[in-house]
Length: 145
Image (cartoon, rainbow, N blue to C red; front, side, top):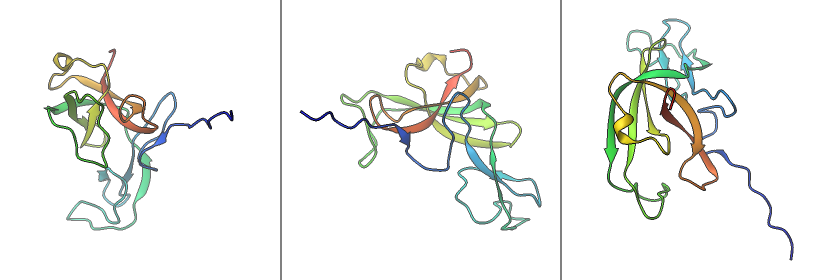
């Protein structure tokens, strides 16, 4: 019997984050006014007083603080992936201090909901979108957890 080909997990969205030991989100910075944005797929500066279309792709800070969070008690509709059986999961809005932007992301697998607090420090990790999936996404994990 032929051996099944191995599948290497890959980012679910190309160009939005790096993988490896020190993953980063990839955003854009406007050289004219210094405004940052994420995701990077925009074509002009989001600052309404600037409007420049000269944006540079940059690695964003790996750490930030929880600005807000919620717990989702529903499975996202297809084509999104959800584990079976479904389990509630947390989404955190994390403020990156240098860039002064807030980035939403799912909270890493295995983080207890009572570990989340407004203002606690988080860092980016890259994990399968759901356990066992081949698509990787960024997630937020409490620093030191």
